[in-house]
Length: 487
Image: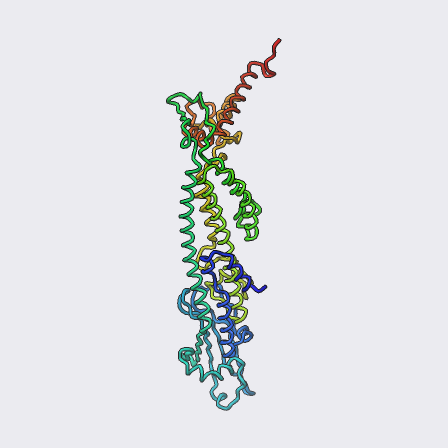
């Protein structure tokens, strides 16, 4: 199947606002055909141009292309050698948003006028012969051809390429319109994401805002010894959202964080992972308690499917741009302008520096789908704290009750007591002598209340585990490690 048809079918599966800003591949293809006819009418077939033009310098940032190759039509007789030089340059004038491509042909007549007058000349090559045939028509149309005479007696024949101008004008207009639309999409997505974050924060409330049984602890009222975290509330979907976000991160739908496969995923792999995640979310949706949570989950899924559509659109649009530029060079033998080289991800006639395929030539190579996924990670996911961010660095479970040493490192109370009983004076992280100096004043009550509020179930489990370990150690110290025996 031709790319043109595949491209059209893919665009039909995308939202209208994306489809309307796609590259007009078929129209650009027609302009290339018109350019080929325009060049052929001047005798500049791709074969001839390929012989006349050298490779473009990809590092040039000026509007004019370097002189390509010099062709010589030798005029000789038995007495000596005289030369007529023909130089063809493919150049651009204007700006990157309004460029006018044209061909400049410089023709230098023979230096020996007597040989010319005597008629000792050979038939010129194809390009000069074709231009001579068309010279009257070209000179009569001042809008198409300018003939300039330099002080060096060189005739400059400038041929504006109307179809080529229309081609680059359409391509640049499409890219500029697309850039503006993608900026609007980015802003709208961020606004919707912030609204969704507010909705989720209202349905994933901590214990203190969803039940009256929550009590705070502090050194001032000396109630730390009666720690009994709440068992949670039924009026919140805190744990459901925590599980949803954890599943989302582990799915790595759009980007892999593994050491071997780090980077953005392909469109096909992203679609597969998105379908798997959607199936898991359908099961999870039935377990949500609040209607607001279900609506928020639906919005969250739609936003991720939009990112998938945008990823497909970016790939199709970049591929269409790459292919149409490749077709332009192949069909016409005209080299690409230097500012469009980042759009080419294929074999150039020359070997340009390795460049990433970017959607826009003047934009960062970072893709918009990746920016949107990063926005989800920065705005949405931090709403629900994750237990791994508050774990003890020794036992790796929740650091409840938290002890903050003078060196500012944090451990749970049981791990710190074990270190003190073993006589370990240095912090396991920074080796500062702060362990044996720690006492009840090192309890981080602010963090303790935060953990009891956001991790009530984990706090209760850790508290029971600490109590069992403390009781076991007391029995071992009394020599009753084998348990109590009744004689």
